[in-house]
Amino acid sequence: MRVRIGGRWRSGTAYLLPDDDPRQRLRGLPRLNSAGVRAMGTDLLTIRVDLD
Image 1 (cartoon, rainbow, N blue to C red):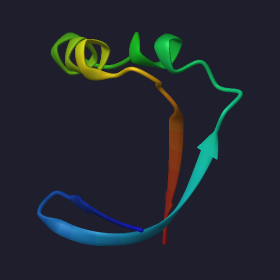
Image 2 (image 1 turned 180 degrees about the vertical axis):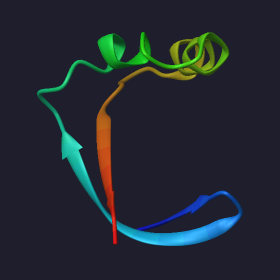
Image 3 (image 1 turned 180 degrees about the horizontal axis):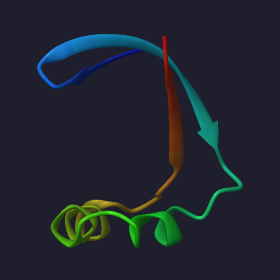
């Protein structure tokens, strides 16, 4: 997959983490970001991206 970080496109590999607790992980994010995810998310899933 490709993600844009700091204005630059980076390649990487995405891994689904179905056993991870996404709501617990949201507690570590900035409040505005996590509030938006909670408001719009219906079936949360953690995805880890390992950059090349």
